[in-house]
Image 1 (cartoon, rainbow, N blue to C red):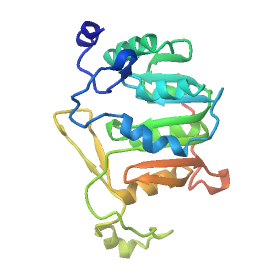
Image 2 (image 1 turned 90 degrees about the vertical axis):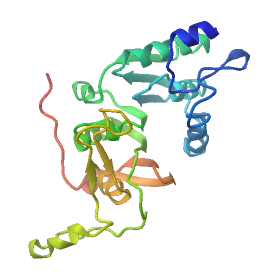
Image 3 (image 1 turned 30 degrees about the horizontal axis):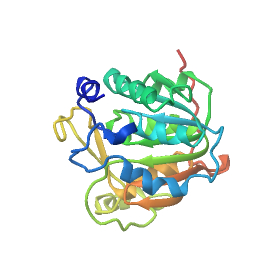
Length: 245
């Protein structure tokens, strides 16, 4: 198995396989993403058996595997063939291949489907999107019950106040205040990765989640949120997608 792991390297997910074998035991972030799962799991419904779950940007499949072990019907998507090869291989080793459907697709492709999911895992993807608010709106439109959201954020103070409902044009100087919702645009690369496009501050994360019609139920830690779709009359605007191809 060690040779197969080496052939499929590099690994970003440290999968725990039978016999105590791990795919990335020396990961620079530690036992990633297991420590994230341990924070998220207590906030999931007690019984997710037969629930439909979408794992967006599944990478090597760690979250998909944990959800499948709990009985969920998982659809795992990624646009990276390398990660999907790892995920399919891991599913076979864990005997979970019948519980997970893998698809090579981008988040934006979800607009071409009417399928909704009870739970959507949307972790580590938002800041890779060239069109983040469009992406978030699409994801929310496919969410039935819960959205588990995470994004890289700007460093700094987490405190902020709700923005005015209607900002006066002559008072727009308030937009320069440190904790106004904002995102930093990465023109070239961040950490050597050309797919890192936007990094929001905490105020922006909260504002964009609300603007997409979500209600934040729990803030697990600085960058992780458990959200539910709000009532339609709570939406800040009605988004219609009329450009199916």
